[in-house]
Image 1 (cartoon, helix red, strand yellow):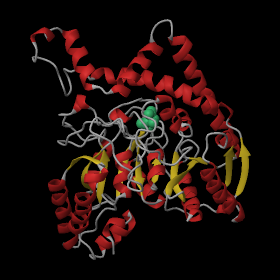
Image 2 (cartoon, helix red, strand yellow; image 1 turned 30 degrees about the vertical axis):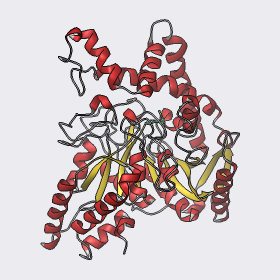
Image 3 (tube, protein in one colour; image 1 turned 90 degrees about the vertical axis):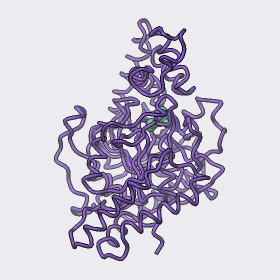
Image 4 (cartoon, protein in one colour; image 1 turned 180 degrees about the horizontal axis):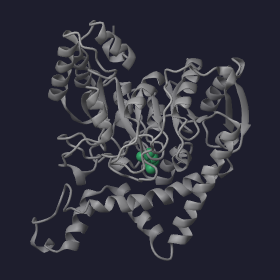
Length: 480
Ligand code: GLN
């Protein structure tokens, strides 16, 4: 039995049957971290002592014969932009280098109620801005599936941690693809729930109308397990939705009742022909098993990236205004006499604290929101956003789920796109419209391409997260 390869379900069963203890499970994951994280750099900080302590508590309950929660005693890694009380939270930014979280995010509270074991905080692109984890102020993460390649981003550390066996599952955040794209690059499952399904309280805001927290796991069943625990309305997040949710364990969907849409705009130039071949082969298998397949059109997809790179930086510029060198983290206050002037404190702290990509987006965002340009850029992008949402509303009148590639390519090499922001932005071509529309989507691994993992994305209708997960389970079985 290889403890570092266990799924949540397997780990839970072994704990219940007392075939393994949570302490053993936790130690096995830390052994793996010690052996390989020097190379991979999935973590920005580790919480070994606290983790062992939590594991022992669960073991004590098990030995008393108490029933345990589904996630109890199971090691999890958390992206560094999600707050865990009394643990450092830097969002991979120098400006928050010494920041310790004063409270728990709502998702963390829920995991604590489950008695989850927190292994540590994972590396990411600074403030979740990027597609490769190369924008981390603390150095990039390597892809465990190919060490010369990026793990994707911005939740690259979380995807790498799961792939490398450093934790059984992880949490990430997804504003334009940051859970799905790294999951695809590393060969694991990544799920972005419907906007509003999971509370964002305690997630450092990047672009508030797009951000969602979601799980990165080894299989679809595990993604559903974690989702069912972290979802739900929260008085601390007014955008969280109060819904009656179906249960994933209710009757499974029948493949013959599923109609899949395949959008023609997602299978054009720029897509690696080998990825296309592997996705098409999954689609024909589904068809052979009785699913209906229909070509559909999402005509406004073409404008998604342009709209995203206006709306997102606009929100980024507003959200990052709070990091002023006074309220949070790094500050140039009192260090130099000449800086004893409020404006200089802001300028010096922010100029030194933010990396190039954060600065680029703050400037872009303030520009598109400024008088005179607001209508030409921001207001127009919002109109395009509505049209993109309408594309999905129309499509879901016809189909149950939409299949696309997760990314146009497999994991690229370090440095390949760092000098050309636009080529980096193109890595998100298939993921951003989902955030603009607010619908749920999941990436699952399919057959490798030239030895590298590849991902297939399935998109569901708004708040049909459970139906999407059930469908994804069928596709997962078919992709093996
Ligand atoms: N890669 C995209 C960006 O750089 C998405 C990031 C995210 O989802 N957090 O904005």
